[in-house]
Amino acid sequence: MLQALFNPRTLLCLLVVVNSGFLFLTDNKLAGLPYLRELYLAGVVGAAVLLLAMWQRPWQSRASMWILFMGVALPVMSALFSWYHFEQPLFYGLLEERRNFLYLLFFPALYLMLKAQPTQEQLERCFLIGGLACVAVGFLYYFKIVPENAAVAFNVDEKDYGLNPLRPDRFSIGGSYVSLCAMMLMYRLRRRIELVPVLLLGLFAAYLWLVLQTRNTMLVWTLAALWIFRAHLHVLVKLGLAIIVVGGVAYMVMPAPFEAQYERLMALVQEATEPGGVRADTTAIILRDTAANWYVGMGALSLQWQGGFSRLYSSYFYLSDVGVLGVMYRYGFIMPLIILVYFVGFWRISRQCRNKGDLLAAFVLDMCFNLINLFLSPAMMYDGNIAALAVAAFVYYGQVRVPASQPADRPLGRPADTAGLAVTSGR
Figure (tube, rainbow, N blue to C red):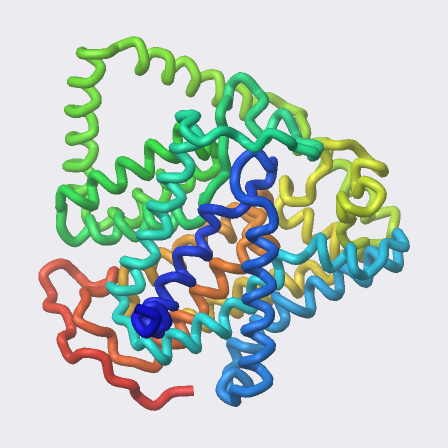
């Protein structure tokens, strides 16, 4: 029993599933277990430090330098800026930027991949389990099967965290994992239409609309589908016809829910196109204060220290709302260098793996949308756990032959490589 539990392949799958955050406390504190994310973070940092001290291989990889820059240098710099500008103690600065330390997940993930030697299909299966775990927990909260956390000592943005009547019962559980799973399934459906992937994709879409309720993500999924199926429009047409037929039958049986959701969609579109709002106010404050400070970074304030930004601006001021402008507030004129290192570094690391399966292709596509959505996406500062897992997979599969699974970028009908898993020479 214990031997099976501590098997490298089991540990790797467990790491991938837990990394989805399906049990972590959400940003509005309404769902999830308190301090579980911090406990997981402590384990990741401890494992990374141990591996860096005892394992020579990480120091031989340029990917490790990228990870250390994003996961260590940036949070330390932010803490120093906030200490210098606001006299916030360094501990609180590091506490506020703690999610950046999840970039260090790269080291235990790569170590377990080298020990377990998983195929890409096996890693995809683990990732899909993590996405489904997020969906299951999210729907448990949505349908009130699991009650919301009672004591919420947290200033939340009513417009963004679900108290707005247009987006009731909103829970941000595993949004990044669910999006990657959806893209992975789209790549799979591009090769062959199968019932199970179609049903799973429909489940993820329902979760996005009912539970996540994120308009930007809805737009990203639409653009992702158009890109993935650009050379196979017949597949997209078949999926569209199937959705129309199923939706039409359901509408004839129960029209009321569809009419209510349509009215809600129109209201959300109208709200999104209205000028002003919390995000516009945050943007104006950042542009004003960074210019007044000669574009020198000011770091990030922790809510645990004198109320954080609410003391200076308002309870609705969040750097995560404004994507790259939040990076500019933290680091000032260094922001262009950080953007360059983040995107170019990720792209160069991904190029090490030429034969990408569905999940690895989804990682690359997701990063492309982060670049397009630069002014809204908080992925650079808050999705280090996803980037670390992706980089570990690129480094590992860049040094092995692709196992018996058909890559996402392989033309239809071309036979898959069945050579099995064999380590080759590589950096």
